[in-house]
Length: 112
Image (cartoon, rainbow, N blue to C red; front, side):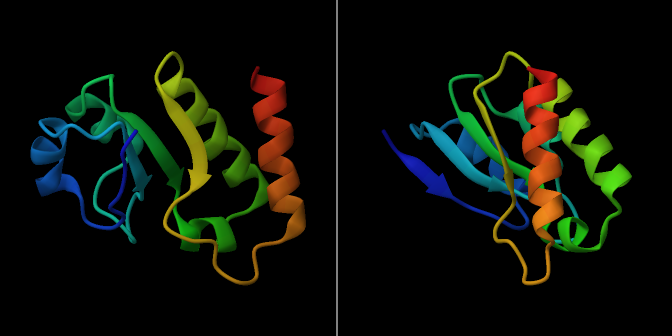
């Protein structure tokens, strides 16, 4: 299995990645860290390539609990039925509250 780390500005690279032999792309970051969201990535990559990411680092740090809840629900709904690992994209910045991690966990369990 080959996992490729390529966070950041991926939009122009995705057609090349789609034609590669990788199994997993990690970690898709929406703006401002990256330049494409999960849904755009899923439209370009074949289903055989799993996708990791979706929660942009500065958003994770600065969002409200309600915004985070909506984002996690969006990601789970968008990627339902697809090979996907919900994760903060690229890295987790210092200062993200423990409560936000708990909210993500609870939301995933609620969604299942």
